[in-house]
Length: 420
Image (cartoon, rainbow, N blue to C red):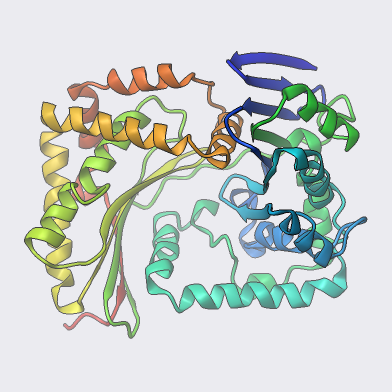
């Protein structure tokens, strides 16, 4: 196995079977966060099996070869720890946050979930119903649903536009045999990244993983097909009629993957544009015009692409005015870029957000896994902060000119029908 010291207290081991293991020692805490990240998720799905990755994530908690569903729920919780999972676009994550002494137990339980689920036919129908209720919850929350609809509008022919939860129709067609096939072809050791952060020792992390068979095999068992890439549908405007108290509007466009060096310029622009109370959108749309309670900008990064967006919720009578104000701010930023003082403030804001987020072992764990999941190089924190400081006025102007023009944005409006 190849083990590299990346930074003080931070190691990476790559096993012959393809497994990548990160650990970061944080002696000032008494806990450990451990996560298993499987590089199989919604971006790898066929349209007719939309939601299968999320369904599999649910089903592994219904029981394993050594633990019942109740055992999985209780074993860490009664010791003060937590066990969780989520399905994303590019990876499915299984995580535990425990006392440092319970790290071996957490590794044992996570291994059970990832490698030894029962995936029984008898558990499928009840869990399918649970996810249908999850879908119903989104349908009843327009400020959640609008993001699902916008993703489908921006990526109509790509898995990045699929619902991670799936639909009632696609879920109905998924069998236990389908889940077992996905598990066999996606949950192999070489398709996983393990990340651990807290009061931990790298050697002991490797020992705990070795006891659970994580280093077995000498080569990856399968080769995952690459995520296809198709152009996003830019510049569209769509209306989804619903009887809601507000109109919920999402603007958005495609950008680039996380490893792109322009990510820091985009992050600064997103913060200045709509990242908080001091942002341009908050000050214009809420404080000056009084058109919304919630208005913000956001960015997401995927393995093959990324997304920049804005959300606003406004009374239907004033939603058109809010949309026009946001379009004006988009075009102003695209045309003018940032003045030097706003760039300086934006750099400090981004650096502060990063440093504050890393005070959590769970956040540190996620950061470590992200290097492998996004094929990104590890950067010590000081180097990362220096890269942010190096962003120039020309850098942000170029990113603003490419990604912020209002006519590039696809706009999805969810709410009462527009009067003709």
